[in-house]
Amino acid sequence: MGQDGEDGEGRPVLTPQQHADEVKHAVRTERNLAWKALIAVEAVVIIVLIHAILVR
Amino acid sequence: MEPVLVVLASGARWLLVGFVMAGALPLVAAAWQIALVAVHGWRNHYAECRPYFPRVAVLIPAWNEGAVLGASIDRLMRLDYPEDALRIYVVDDASTDQTPEVLAAKSDEYPGRVVHLRREKGGEGKAHTLNHGLAILLADDWMEALLVMDADVIYTPNSLRWMTRHLADPTVGAVTAYIKEGSKPGSTITKFIAFEYITAQAAARRSQNVFGAMACLAGGAQLHSRENLVAIGGRIDTTSLAEDTFTTFLTQLNGRRVVFEPHAEVLAEEPDSINGLWKQRLRWARGNVQLTLRFKNLWFRRSRAHGLGDASFGLFWFCLFLLPLFMIAASIGLVGLYFLDFPLAWTLFHALWITNAVTYVFIGVFALQIDPGTGRRVWLHALMFPGLVSVLIILYTCFPPLFDVGIAGLLRQVGLGTGPVWSAGLTLFIYVWLAASMGAAWLAKWIEPRRWGRPLSVALVWIVGYGPLLCAVTFTAYVKEARRAEMTWDKTEKTGKVALS
Image (cartoon, rainbow over all chains, first blue to last red; front, side, top):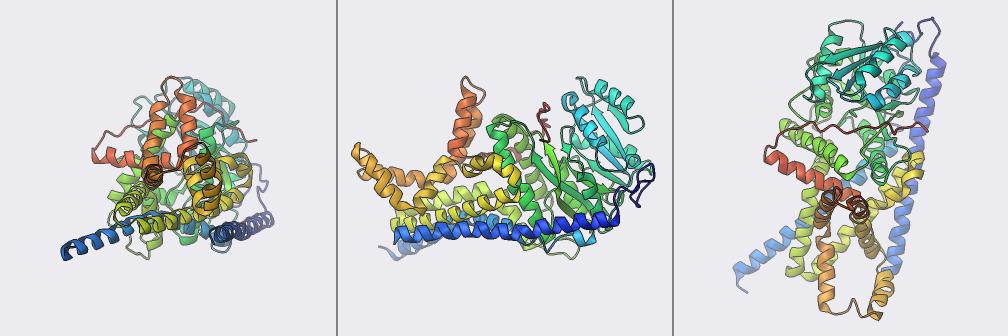
């Protein structure tokens, strides 16, 4: 056993395609965080706008 | 006024302005660090990942962990990882509870895969316990990678193989996972910790991936390549209280990368009392003081071999490390200017707290989306993280008419809130609050073991804030280290409250 990713009975634990799919999913999830950051920025902009209107 | 006095007054004014601005520095740095998470989708280590299943030795230091060890071993055995490439070595640090019996039963249940290593002399600390096991593991060539974990943590099924895939890249020396607070149903304190871990682990470590310098491998999830362990001397530093941070730094100083795998989730049981939390965090904070001094020649000195000397990493490190001093400086600045230049103090107060509000909203809204599962459980704790008083000050600075017309109007109707004494008192109170909140947080720790102390102390944390509580711990660490207080290994008591769902 070792680097070829097979268990004690010779079964593959992970095929290269499965690995590629998992990495793709991880990267997609990470890239979605950029949109979530934008939502947080929007929340800040809304607070600042309300503040500006109230103190005008 | 005499010219000399004019110069002195001007110098003092600028000094105090600098103090107030210092209070804003950690806020800006924290927001910048969290903002970097947004680019983690493009600056990460996934392109270098390969399917890789090295022979992993799991090393668990255990002192009186009988209540949690059995479940942790069972979970490890169910990991999605090749059976013959995973062995568990538990270093029993002279336990006096049922730990030996639990280990004997698990060794019988999983023959050849669970190994009991007993130390007859215990209590020297986690690093000594780990070194006992490490010496045995390195003497044999079976182990290709080492996973150091705590006895109570529970690994989600895919977590280990998602960590090992990064070790396929020989430039990576170590990998860490996302430690989540996993107590069910959870208390006020554990829920505050759960939110803290979204920001301090899930978010901050992603940003550390982005700029290529990792502050710390989570103590409960440290995966090292064998080559890395040999390169850092084959043993864990025993001279400080932050052995995991030392190992992280040494790995990077030896030219190997440390990677955070955010999708490998590990659940841990964290303290559910203020005093338990205080003991744990005081150990960490004292360790960080020791480390900061030990590596004093490292900071803000760029190196091709590692990113620890980069200005951005140094800024993040010191903004957190010196946060209590920044808070005290801001309060001193505002109070000083109150007497020296009242309008300037008022302007700077608004600027500081609006910066605080922007940071609070940005980090809170973003963090809750980074781990939405935990976020749904702890959104109220995220909202109240700075404490009720600070939230009210933030609301006041953002929406002053709400207070000037609404609350102040109500107070005036009952004969309060009018007059110069009331106004001056309130102004000074909010100016001094950043520093005073740490003292109030200390009061929560002091009051907890006393009669009726538990509910009172929890109420005080809601009012004062969890953030100031951590700052109070850091300040105490400065004092303890300055007084060269004895290093004690105060183990966090674990009771097995962690559940996967």
